[in-house]
Length: 453
Image (cartoon, rainbow, N blue to C red; front, side, top):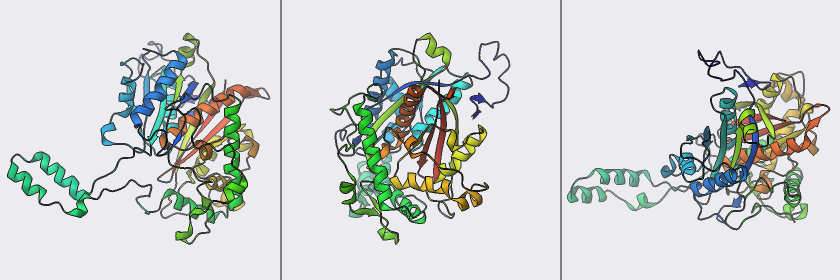
């Protein structure tokens, strides 16, 4: 972890300074690239995680002239992943225009995967272990792995070990019709059996978030994303893929009336007030994103842009099974810890990117920070943590409009925020600041602080 952009790691290895490795340095965001996100079962229905990640990677390579370049390291991941993709990121590198000498590895932290790859690689750059890196993520809900039953799995493994025909026939005789039924993929939490939407429905009711407020967040997300596309903001952040040039979930013509006509989909079975709909919740989505990170020296040597610096990050987790906090509320605790290290408050942040897993997730987060009792009893403060200027929140749209391919969301947000900060430049003589907040399954969350250069 770093404070004010400076590493808090111990002394370097003996001789490290003689080898030209600085004790601390910045990790900068050069730029990003993603393919347009598509609704599951749509334009990318026949595309695999490997197909999409390679496409996003090649788009980044082409944009910054990295053909045949040996990058320090590439890290990416997928939440919905076939066993054949055990080395997914390395295979994407080998299938791309990068030098095959570029090392790569997979990482998975549910919806925080993309942001965590940015954080980990940035820290390696700060420590001088690498000079360049590509962070990313990909997910295909269309190509989700289907798991066979335990009975069929055991039969298949035993057949593979059998040496004679009688042995194979005897093994096959153990099969029963019920063994042939596959286990469909799901999003239920293993420890509760509730889906993410059902968990959020409980939190939504806890914080008394209204249906109208949720629909308003969704409407703003679509309007802001459409306006950003129309202004050309995404021209150097998105490359077309499989016929899509914009995110397939974007509904530029939606309205409060259209959103209000949708039926609730979460909450009723739990006895909660049902206010969450398909319109104010993110759909299952396919897509991939990448972010190019570097040291100042590496970027300067190639005359590449430097949009923003990755200053610091913080991870948190909540006990959503036995505790008082909802599944997606971990960032509520992570942000105060992160900003406190830099003597900052919410008022010091120029742009907020709070991942819209659901509109109610954003609103629950804001409600917790604005609540006097929560601030005292849960955050250990004298009162409420603070309030966000809504004009600074998700100004170019977010997951409700763009969609949410789980592991790809972090890269989308980081690349967009870095460009936004670069365009902002400075505020009252200081760098513009941006805060990224991503909640994740398992009661986790990762947040990060970026600054313009």
